[in-house]
Length: 109
Image (tube, rainbow, N blue to C red):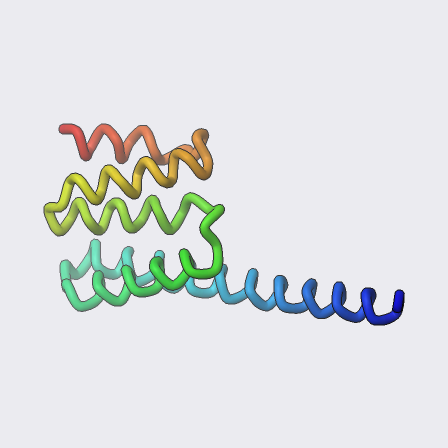
């Protein structure tokens, strides 16, 4: 019985580390694409970036970064309400996230 529980616990840890790696990979890809968009203004790149950020939300809803970037993307597309919704979600996850005050200022300007 204890061996089975240990095996289950070990598999859960493996899945979590794979999930963590996938989250970090997709987050970094999203950020890289977002930075490319800033330089190129190519909407196709921005859409790819948003896909990466939404994918990260499916695995990690407890991190502020995807919400932060999705908020910026909605702002870029002119949807201030959704930008604000995602900003609030980021604040709920991590109220002290350093870039939130700057983004809030941009959205409300």
